[in-house]
Image (cartoon, rainbow, N blue to C red; front, side, top):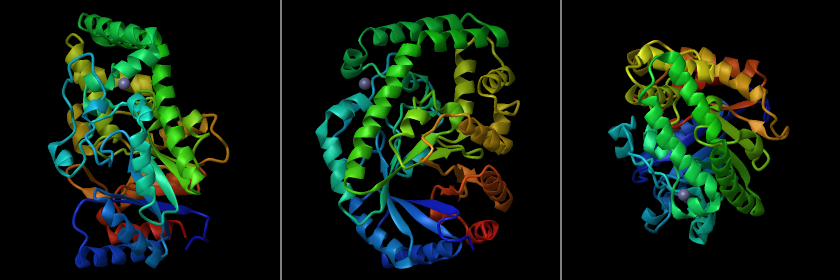
Length: 403
Ligand SMILES: [Zn+2]
């Protein structure tokens, strides 16, 4: 077993049901096993906040440090209507890859606007209220970003609400114009080179608005992390994988100056939002839908070229087997190149769950992730994303690997 503090093993709990004697018993059992394998922190999301306190007690009983998992801009746990705070699109939504089964599981992935939220004190008060519901050691801020490709192109290229228009002034209308111009142009382009050139051009001319989006996310994050730190809590943050960070406007370098630890979500085998397979497939689908006669293979090649990731040649292959785990190391390498706050710790997150059809990994995959993380010199990782779907076998195996 690792010495305390040497390798930090973290995991998560998504709780969306009644808390009964039965499931609290099985959770205690699971956490005790995980504790033996070295689990230090558990990040807890309970759709019903009244269960936070008993869930935290279970953690305390087995000696695991409880942290609140707080979704900020989608599935936000406020007790009032959030319709007026939704992001505003300028083009049609387009198709979304998010599975109905995921939505049925209690996560809607409907995004609110960071600029509208930061103006409304009621969101921050609710956050503080929930922080006060139980004896947490820290908070983990999630969904603090703009919508990803999995939400469809319309939501990905936002926000055009009145607040954003006002705050971004002329860059907002320039962005709107650029989007319409980009789609018109893309519709007349064929072949890899032309499409690639159009994408690069779009990225350059929208630079100012993208900076506005990154600052919007950062500003909101700072507000919340300051409040949490004021009451003595440690702050962690869930981040999109490095290759996708610009698309959702998460600036690792600046964010690292406001949090204690960051979890880059480097999921190579997950067909769910934030999972590289779903997000990259969604991007490729957007290209195929909008460019003139672009093949799946060409779309994937373009995305491979832009991200530097190793991608399969067909959509079907991504759907069936995700992407090569070598990409995990490629993503960690990108983090090495960043100018992060040296005291902020990086705990990479990878999937360790069995939740078909979204994700099923076995010992081999989890072993590869753990070994790669340790080889890169990181002193912790997050077994994502729901401990109750991580088998005892995997927990024991991880425990042996960090010994
Ligand atoms: Zn907005």
